Amino acid sequence: MKDKILNWLANGETGSSSKAMAFCFAGVDCDLNAHPYDPGDFNRCLLFLDAVAATRADMCLLRSLSCTWSRLVDRWDEIENCFLDEAGFNWCKAKKAPKTYALIKSVIARPAHSSE
Image (cartoon, rainbow, N blue to C red; front, side, top):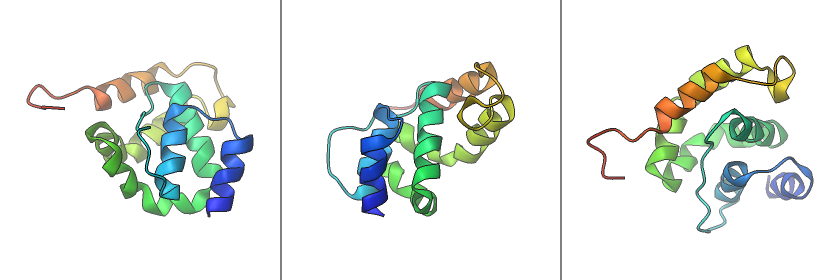
């Protein structure tokens, strides 16, 4: 799996959040814990998961990156389905995804009682 991750890092469409995923799944300890902020970031995360499909089974590992990642993992399937319905895989249906953007923003918004 690490070879696939390295290949994706070298040749894939990367962003900070997808790199954070890659490093986490590769077991690399680093300060990068960026999470997807918008549909473009989320799409790059989906491209990573497509390139290194075995990582899907270990999505729970991303919870260790931050409380925000934990919230995203909890609702990943919902966000993914929204994005795929709205924009399609790698933007094959549309170039904008406002519903997905609103959903991501609602998930990453800190609850009022949070100390994050």
